[in-house]
Amino acid sequence: MQILIFGAPGVGKGTQAVELAKKFNLKHISTGDILRENIQNNTELGQQVKSIIEKGELVPDNLIGKIVKDALIKSEKKFILDGFPRTRPQVDILEQVFDELKISSPKIIILETDDDVIIKRLTNRRTCNKCGAIVNLLRLDKELTCPKCGEKNNYSQRDDDTEDVIKNRLKVYHKTTKPAVDYYRAKEGAMILDGTLEPLEILAIIESKL
Ligand code: AMP
Image 1 (cartoon, rainbow, N blue to C red):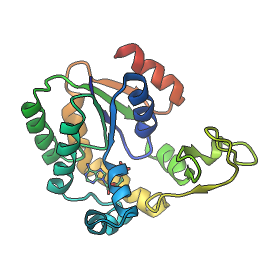
Image 2: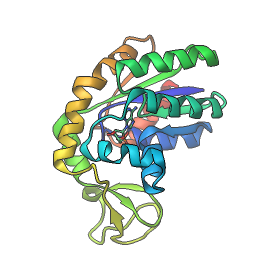
Image 3: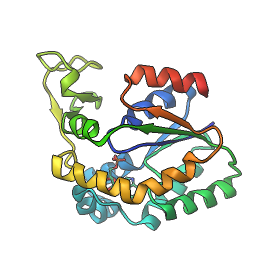
Image 4: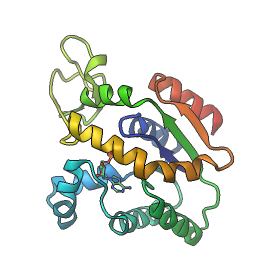
């Protein structure tokens, strides 16, 4: 199975992608995670993209295109792709790779939400320092207990989850990524879902349609 998942930053694509990958035994390919890992490990790629990501801009199409192509080849056609394509030229890169790999009808999932919901969610998004779970502070108990591992009040915040950068990421999404999403929205069978629903509800709807 091949799945492409789309939506504005913070709409919950990563959360759904992790669950779907587990459920259907797919490789979760998140371009954001790959880039952040490279920044953390201070690789050449990491050094190249750090300031771009911190500003909420997009890294160059060819650079990310090559990374995705390698990851798709390694996945043996069992993947959920999260965070790519994000521009119209990236759509062309992906379509070419799909031709080469003989992938003709990936499942398409598009999550939609208003910008004000996104801003509220992202300013409250944190990562558990112990288990890596992504949480929302507004959904935690008073002691800020991680729902996955039980660790208390031990989180970090992504450098690009500050209000100014979030607003820029949303601007980039509407201007540059929307045309790529619209290309897939027009495909037969594309699932267009309400991203304001509870994560488990969204997951159930996706599973029933897959
Ligand atoms: P994400 O975790 O998907 O929100 O991605 C975090 C950041 O990584 C984005 O704001 C971009 O700077 C960069 N990035 C991730 N995927 C792409 C992509 N397909 N094209 C360009 N930049 C990307």
